[in-house]
Length: 320
Image (tube, rainbow, N blue to C red):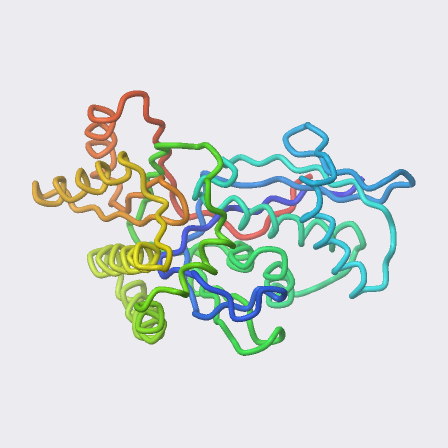
């Protein structure tokens, strides 16, 4: 039996939001992320004499739900000259398609489990590059702590690398789950539509500057600079969505309320910042000493809201 591989989700502090090549998932911009300990996917892949099968959280998925998984695995098999049928078993400890980067951990774990199944040795750079073909953000989940996905200009040059896998920064993330239902607009569709915004290219031109500023904030252990830039970058991304033609948004009324609450907390001297991916859920960046008070305030405003506190997570791990 193949070993189970665990990959953790990541949250982009400098966003990836646009493809230069959809088939290879080459991005239009570089990105930087924080790998999270609280959300992860456990996956195993093994050969079978029966038909291909994909089990998610113990439930066998139909052919439509399995299509993306086996389309990706077939690409890897073709690359390395294999043709077996496979059984994939995956347990996702993160809400799927709700803006919490579930595909990043899912395809990072799937890529590593494939190589475990066939006992193929690849380094993390190559594993990151190949995970990218399954889901762009998965290339960053190969690494723990902070990682950077350099956009590159080809299949060979687009991969992530570890910026700092063991950060000492006092940085915690509060995942505020306002709505865990599957989002109405997929990330793939959103990325494509966003490019119709008149502000997309100006944002793209700022990418290298903002990436370098974020790297400097991390190296200088500057929580304030990191938080301000993460919030700005997220707002730029969502402003592009709102100015696309036709316009769209992942925000819901509670998303706006949550943003306002973060701003109110800052005015009261509780330093925290928000970032939002493709979904209605807000993530709050804060120091550990402020996390309890922030959680209490959010729970007083939002009834029955689930809030998960996360710290830095590890890269790919292999479970016994």
